[in-house]
Length: 387
Image (cartoon, rainbow, N blue to C red; front, side, top):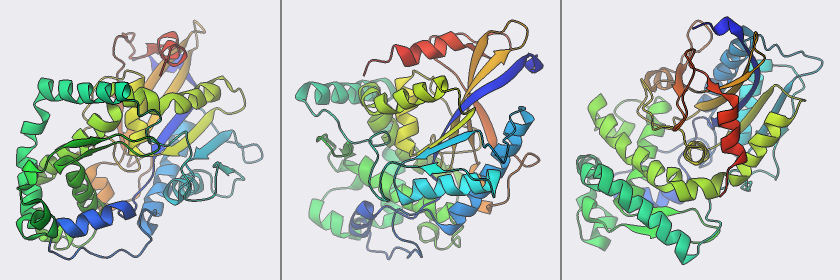
């Protein structure tokens, strides 16, 4: 790769927040799904944890070194960086820690629209239009995905693991529903101004798996993570199918992705055309990243050394390069994230101990021999974007 010929000109970084506590609206689900006692947390529900902040600081430090390597240097007296986060504690705090790790002591404002704990429309995955026509389109896409990949059938082993870990047959939920975990009926909850949900074993499963993951990422003692019942990487891999399939079906599917990403894509378009800042950092959620990648037709991917498709603290870096000789512009996108192991050990990452880098591919576009896409190809997706 003759990469010296490509000068990084601008980046838009879309990050998922760092390690948080379980979400408050899932706690009742969790307590009903198992007779076992869930571990307690020392932060408010849905908040970035202290450990999450430390890991984001490491990530910020790495990011500044990576930018420097690409010849983008931030000047203390005129920081060439714009930061915008969803107005929730975990996203604003993630932005603060990333900036502190990258440019400690620099006067870089963290922009957010509202007071803390109010969802910004740019990052809000709630249903904008709950017409019957849209709902039927979403249901059709879920059915087609299932027909193509036998999703629900293939989740059976993962559901069995969840049921066994939870001791679900002795739970309050089982007493109410009187059916096996895998047999809980599916239902698409699709109501205006509420988050879409694929209720049933997948929705309950993602809450449970999320809780286990957060215990793991927070380095709980092994006997406390899922009550010591996850003993192999294979089990984690199975459990993560639940999480990935839920995010894919609900947020990555074409109709929801295009509806949810409209404001975000407009924001990214503005940032790409704004000459003020070379570095732009947006902090949102897994649903934000999944919807954006779905809306802009990125190819399906599997991240090495990580079971999550949208890992906690991970970031999609959209990059515009200028080809030195021809003056033409090119595009590259990378998922930069900490591995499953790096998140557990919590070790410092930097240019000598980097996070994982994975180049994302675009559907219906061909990269050049150096692995770069024509900037026009990417810009066209943004310009032609019709929700």
